[in-house]
Image (cartoon, rainbow, N blue to C red; front, side):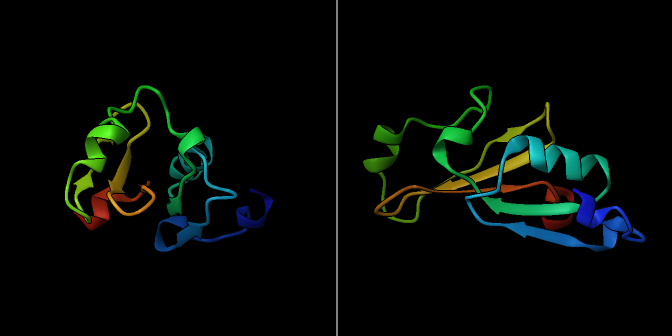
Length: 98
C-alpha cells in the first residue's frame, strides 16, 4: 500500500495482482482509494457471501462456461470459468469494463 501513496489521480491506474497477493480486502482497500484493480484469486480467498456455483455443477458444464457473480458488499465482480482447474478473477473496476 505504501507504494501507491504518492500516486496522483489514482483512478487513472489499473493495478494487476497474481494469485499470491490477491485478496478481497486488498481490492477493497484499493477501491476505497479510487484505484482500479484486477487479480487472479485463490479458491481459499473467496468470500463465503459471494454466490458462486458449486464446483461439481461447473464440472458438468462445457469447457469455458463462465460463472460471474457480483458482490454488492465489496463492489467486486468475480469471474470463474470452467477449465481443467477452475480459474477465478476478481475485478474492482467493474464499472469500466461493463
